[in-house]
Length: 451
Image 1 (cartoon, one colour):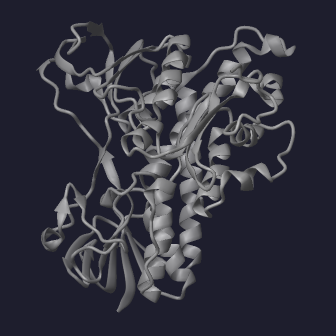
Image 2 (image 1 turned 180 degrees about the vertical axis):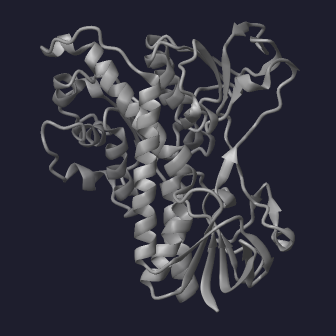
C-alpha cells in the first residue's frame, strides 16, 4: 500500500509530495490538468511575467529622464501573452522533472475518493494509507442579470488567453487579481474601471494602504467605485448600484475564488462548509484524510499552501501539531509600486481595543528611492515595545521588505531587535529600520515633529 495519495499537483500538492518523499514515504500524486496548479499556470507566475513586461514598457516610455533615448516604444500584447505562456511551460517541465527525481508517481486524470483508503483515477484504483486533498480553487463566477453576450465575461483564467488588447475593461473586485490586472491593462492604454462591493479598495488591507492606492489609481487614470455592484447589463452597457452606467468591452470577474471540493461519492462523507473543514493539523472529520491549501479556506495563497504541505507531512510522521498562524502570512499585490502587508490592520486593532504605537515612514525619504525615481509609498508599522502587531508597505521591493517583518513577527523579535540591526545603505529596506525608529519619533530621515 502506498503511504500517501495526494489529489492536486499545485503548490500544496507538489510540496507535500516532495517533502513526504524526502522523509522516505511512498507517494502518488494525482493531477487532472497541469502540474503546478493555478499558481504556475493561471495565476501567480503568468501575471508576474506580464507585469515584468509592463514594467519594462513603462520604464522605456519614460527612459529619457534617465539619460537614455528611445523612440516609438510600443507594446505587443500578443507577444506579452506568448511570453508568459512559454515561461509557465518551461517552469512546468522543470517542476515535473523535479517531482519525478524523487521517485514520485504522477497519475494524470481526475481523482475520485472511493473510500478512506482508495483513490480512483484513469480507470484504476490506488490503495493508500493517507489521503491529502490539495485540489486548489477556481474563479468565483457571479451571476449577472441582463441581456448581453456571455463572451464579454472573463475570469482570471480566460484573460490569459486574450491575444487582442481590449479597448475597455470593467473589473469586479479589488483584491490582488483585480488590482494587478487593472495596472496591467491601464499601462497598455485600456480604459479600466474597478468596482468593489465593500467600502474600500483591497478590503483586507489597512485603510491607509487603501487610501494611497486610490491616489495611485487616479494617477494611472483607473476609475474605481467602492460599495458598488452591477445591477444589470444591456449589451455593453453596465448599470451600477451607485446610479452610474459604464460602457465596457469586457468584464473581468476578480471577486475571489471557490474551493474544488467534489471528489466522488465518498467525498460526500467529508464535512464541508463552503471549504473543507479541518482541525489545526489539517485533518478532516475522516481520520486519515487531510485537506491543505485553498480547499480548507485558511489562507488562499500559494505560500500558505506550501507551508501547510510541510506541516501536514510532519504531523503524519510525528503526530506533533504545528500551529498555522494566518496572522503571520504575508500578502503581496504586485505592480509598481508593490503592496505588501502582514499581521493586523489598524482598524482591527482599534476594534479589539488594543494599545499600540504607530509610525508611517515615507519612501520618498530614502536615497535609493530617489536614485531609482520610485518615491511613491510608505512603511506603516503597528507595534508596542514588545511586539510587532502589523506592517503595511507600499514601495518598490515591498515583497522583499515584508519578509523582514515576517521573520521578526514569526520569531517574536520586538522593534528593538530590528533597530539594533545594521541595514545596508542605500536600500529600500532602510524604510523598515526607519519606521521602527519612528515609533518613538527617532527616525533619522524625517523632520522632527512640532509639538
